Length: 112
Length: 116
Image 1 (cartoon, rainbow over the protein chains, first blue to last red):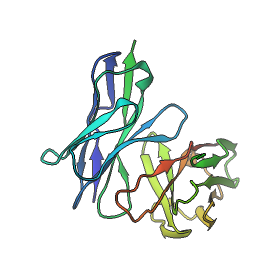
Image 2: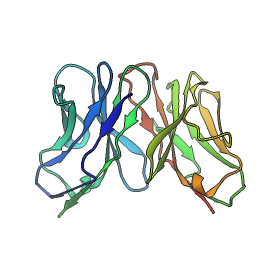
Image 3: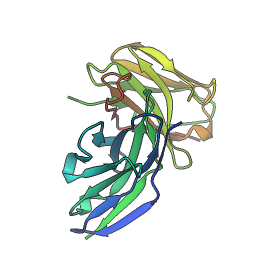
């Protein structure tokens, strides 16, 4: 079985400060990891994914994520947060089949 | 590209009524997924189609739920009869090839269903 844990329900940061959203995973075989963002009353938007290769993955809107195999983590980061980054963020993992397992989500609030 | 299209965006119905949700996947994608999102259970996969064929419907809650994909550009999720506990946001997603572990799923805007 595969699973994702997002240990923080909420993350609050000031605009201009670094933003980190944490994610750990459990999966059999090689992990394929994804981050999505959901704005109010909208669908999930793909941000980035890790398949193989460089552990630092760069994605949309200035976000990046670091894959750490020993810690089974895939934390999402942004060096300087914007108020418009306030949204719900989901981490997801896929193992050896087609199923994508999502975490419970982390609500990010960036204050001006 | 228009992305994944879902209709209606909002649906309010009364208990016992039939509800049909619609989805048009991204052109050229051959895998389609239906998800349900609730506060209590988060995102749940209901059913997965590959090349219009249902591959896994183990997530469908019960017999009241059914899904079809008559062609590569259209899918429906039907609830009959609907119950208040079916109230949720239903998402459709598509990807190029569901079998490929690296493939990205792209989500539609969702249908917010309220059953009174």
